[in-house]
Length: 80
Image (tube, rainbow, N blue to C red; front, side, top):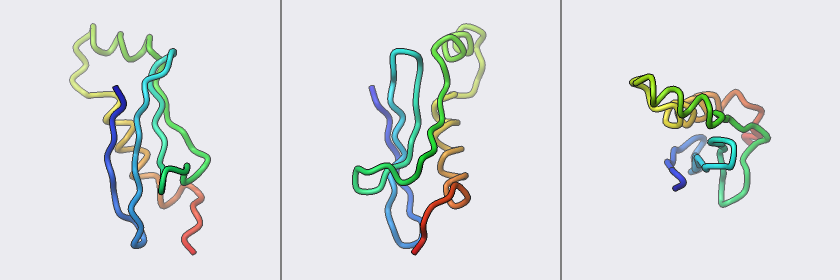
């Protein structure tokens, strides 16, 4: 099931989407349903499952979503 959060930057609302894939999870930022930049963040299923089995306390997908949002102003967007 996809996960979504939103954030505001430069007076615009952006959406961070985490989408499950055949190989793990992919995270990308969108504005009005269109990718806001060319960057994606991902974790493969092997790492994701190993983390859960080894009781890693962090949610890897949530961490990717936070990283994507934190990196966004520096990830080559066009602010104007």
